[in-house]
Length: 187
Image (cartoon, rainbow, N blue to C red; front, side, top):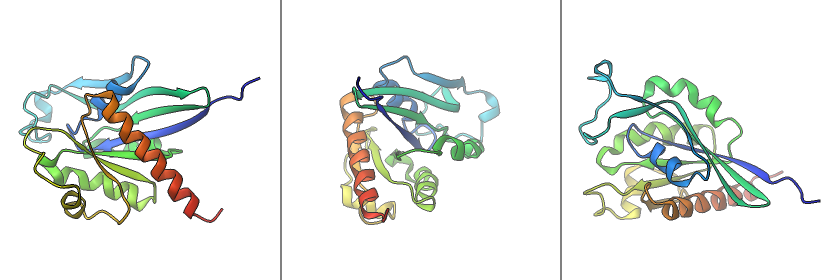
């Protein structure tokens, strides 16, 4: 009788409009659970959509998706809301996770620091996924790591959140990074 598959929980975090919902949607083998709501005039002056003027919805609780890697491993994806008014949910969403992908939009790099600080302060493994937005390809990985003041060893990966294969490569990097960190921690 085959053993039950190992479930791994992965958090997808980042600033408002960085591509978290898009990544979960691109990867999930099941119809993802999305808690998107239409942006209203109540968010005017609160949510800066200048860099993402076509954005019409926002996540208000979380996104959820699933990837079956093989008969021994299932990944569960939990996307966080990006706005600070929803950060009170992050502790519950992150509880029990193996690590996180912090999505970064280089046009609004300052929006990334809260998510990076969150995972660093909790000593949770994370990788930085630099989402492929227009006018962001002129920056090198080392320059991005320096700009984000990342600790040595935090992987930085370029990705396109719309493309499953690009996102999957980022998840593989995260799981490898988390495993390498766990081997360094005395048991």
